[in-house]
Image 1 (cartoon, one colour):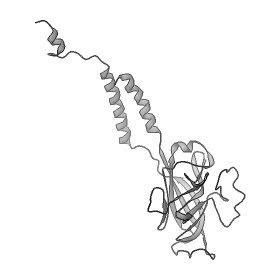
Image 2 (image 1 turned 180 degrees about the horizontal axis):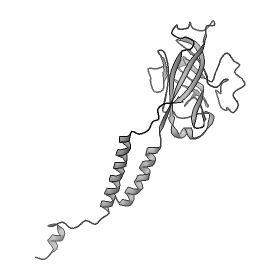
Image 3 (image 1 turned 45 degrees about the vertical axis):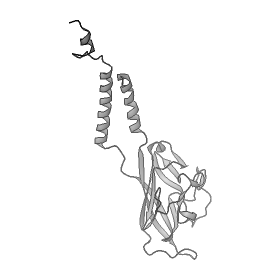
Image 4 (image 1 turned 180 degrees about the vertical axis):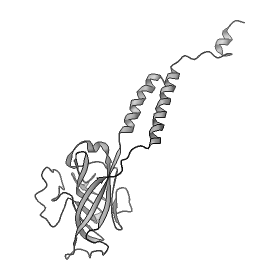
Length: 227
């Protein structure tokens, strides 16, 4: 490897380290009402007003570079857990079957609102097989479904930002949802040190490979010398 090739690999490697950084947001679901009307399953006594359930969504950092409402993205991770009921992307043992999102039923993700480089809201929803059990985002079924939020385009805009509604084995209930960045995902110091050391070795090897090698005693050059 030439010195020039090794040096060219340095910015390429650093760029690779900087790209595709996963960013995770914790989602908090706060129960504010329980639907006890006829037609709904009996509410599970474990669910009480004021209870808080958790979830998370993970996207590529590049997705957050553009603000917008009801945007879709290929997710790196997604999960909601309410008692023993869970929707987890990639987990066939959970209730997860797909998303409602900006492109309609079975979108690649729910609609994501990004403002100031931060996730601020979700729209659409996540569902199980046969569309049950589900969690709807930006929906309060106690309110008229129209008009939609100003500035939202696409499917499943909803009728109230930062609201959620769910129908699952625990019953029918809903409330508000909020978002907060989880711990920042950065390479550990040891990983960065190893990357820098590896790049330094590449440069060193490249430079050594570009220098002429001296003839070794007893080698071909020595054999050609007259005695």
